[in-house]
Image (cartoon, rainbow, N blue to C red):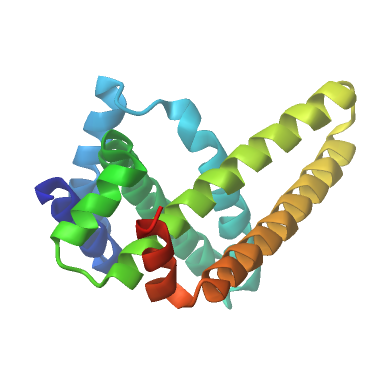
Length: 190
């Protein structure tokens, strides 16, 4: 439980930090995780592709290009730091361990279930995305860079639409069981 609380405090402080020098100090922990091999740099590639799109979007839509670039870079650094620390902490717990920790923190059951469903939804999204990219690579190994971007956009859109449908189905399943209270009673009767 202490690890989860420390991780949440870390994420909160990183999110609220506006100073670049303080962010540099806060990046020591994620850098230690990277250097000790608790998280591989490969696992950060996909998140940084999304960060690059976000930085480009902010730079082009911000009133001043350089300010948008700086803001995007700071957000990307925060995302990488928080992701690294959460990945190392939560990987050790697993979904059931995380649920137990959240319950021991005396959080409402509904919030615990929502958090666990969110974590599981992210895992499913990642698995579907990886599967779709592997399938696209196998079906079309020799494509141009422009076609590759079109394929990536198509895969991303398809996976996001599938995830929305999956989330709606999960919400319907919870409601059909009488909400979270009925869902927990049904699960406990098995």
